[in-house]
Amino acid sequence: MTHTLAKALIRPIALGVFVAVALGACTPKTSLRGNLPREAQLEKLELGVANKNDVATMIGTPSVLGTFDSNVWYYMSRTTEQWAFMDQEIVEQQVLAMYFDEQGVLQHVERYSEDDARDIASSDRVTPTAGKELGFFEQIFGNLGRGNPLGG
Image 1 (cartoon, rainbow, N blue to C red):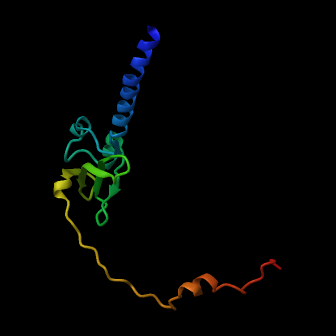
Image 2: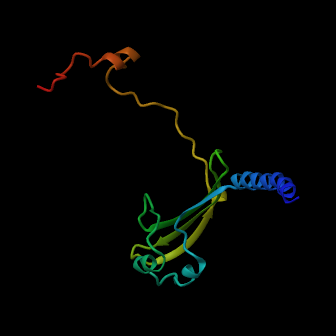
Image 3: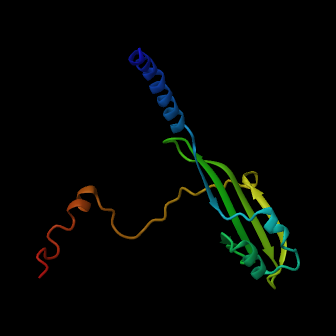
């Protein structure tokens, strides 16, 4: 009787394990990248008083300095999800910009999200280079006979 009961339970248990594994494989892989300061840290920074050294000490160095203005510090954060073999998808992206004056004193803090992003059209043009275009066989066999294979 116990053998029959065990045999009857094997299929439901195996099915339950299979369903649990299958559902576990369907959960997304979430990744958080970046250094975005917490609100409690930002509240300690006083506009017009805190300088670059104070900011770096309290919340860390920025992710990026401004390209054209080193008095702008950017702290960036991005959360992505990836389902199985699919491409990663951006779930949330934030940028915190800190603007300093010429003396290095914090003047303004601004938050940017994906809604603030702008699409930039890239150019399809190709810059020509000097020289000769090599064909397939020239690339494969072009170095045959050059140099000494024995190294002497």
